[in-house]
Structure formats: structure tokens, C-alpha cells
Amino acid sequence: MMKGKSPYDHLTLQLAYFIFSLAVLSMKYASTFAFGSASFLKYYLFSLLFMASYAFFWQKVLAIYPLTRAYSWKSLVFLWVFIFSIFLFKESVTWKNIAGALLIVSGAIMVNSSE
Image (tube, rainbow, N blue to C red; front, side):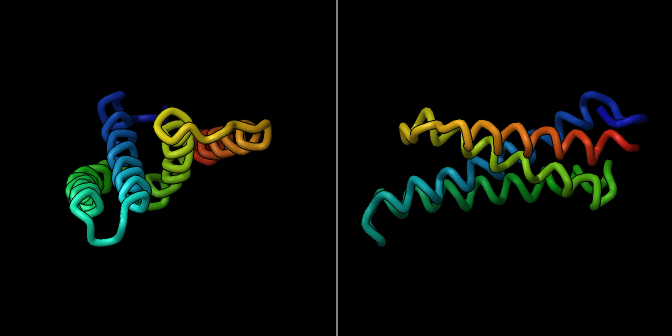
């Protein structure tokens, strides 16, 4: 955790990116339906709602952290989407996926531990 920041601050940052990953997930799920169909539009609308929520939390995050610090955690969105894809889309997991996920997490920690 970053020096001088409360657990609440860090949770707000992670919550913002979790919500962003839900927006990406909704877009991915919408793409499984025919363009313009009711299901496509429903999940696309969910995506827009998640993006609006993300924008709210992102403003809160920027009030707490400098942009470079806050943005450096964005790589974890790929980890969230990877985890969702395994459970919701039954995508396969390879050792390369796991190695990549570990690289992403360790990189985010290393970049942010120097503060």
C-alpha cells in the first residue's frame, strides 16, 4: 500500500478499476449477440452505466492520487477481465496466461512501491 494513504483511498482506486473492468466485460458480452438486438443493446447500456460510475470514482481517485500513480494501476483491469473470462466465458487458462497475470500484478506493485 502507498505511504500516507488510507486503506479507504486504496480501495476507492481498486473499486474504480473494478467497475471499469465490468464495463469491458459488458462490452465483451454484448459482442456475443447480434448487433442491434435487444440483448446487445441491454449489455451495451450496462457498459455505459458502468462507465458513468467509473467516471464518478475516477474523479474521486484523482482527488487522492496524482494521475501517474492512479493510472499505473490500470493494468489490473486486464487481470480482472482475465478472471471474469475464465468463469463467465469458460475461456481456457494456460501457463502463459498465468505468467502474464503475475507479471502484470508484480509490475503494478513495483511501480507503486517506490513512493
